[in-house]
Image 1 (cartoon, rainbow, N blue to C red):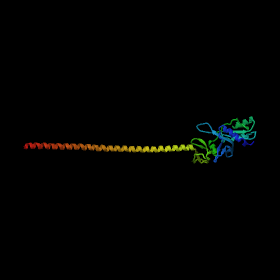
Image 2: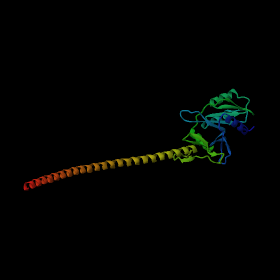
Image 3: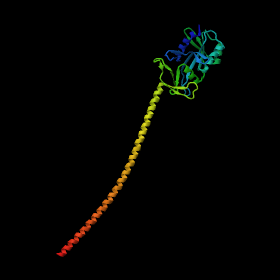
Image 4: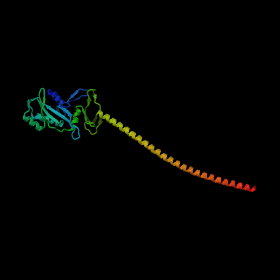
Length: 273
């Protein structure tokens, strides 16, 4: 049997284990993560899923399976599977064997590679793979070729194309002047909405703050004007009181003057009589 015969079986097994093994083309057709990679490194079957939260950074768990259709494996096959470590956190070698020899298990353990036994209706993991630490930036670059994009704000991965509407899956791109290859950074649609909403709220809050500051300035000017008016009122009120007192004193003096004149006139008339 050819190696391609085993690809769908391994892919189905990985999907049952929670791995994502396909993306989508721009036209909405399914893009299987089969016989894919960067440069000369080609992975027969690739699976990706979200790993647990480690050291405050979300990380992916990528698994690469090197498939051999022959019943006997060699050191070269194991090394070929181990070469996936620059892109995969776990690397496996799969072959349709009755059983792996102790020498095969020893060589695989030394390379950190897991072993998978293939049968027509079963896929059995015989030896678990060690956990490798690939470069997350290299993985993100690799995912770009698989039409999977990463949003650095919510730190989630999205299919680049929407298989239902056959168009670009929302979001937008921001220019990254420091990137050598991918000049644009992806921002998902949900974060775009939140950013737009937060931006509107920020602008509204800033405008309300400006209006409040204007009202406070007007209130300060009104208070200053009121103090000035009160000062003028007090000034003219004191002037009024002063003039009123002066007028009352003048009237009183005139009353006294004419009263004395009247009294003198009465006395003069009495003498004449």
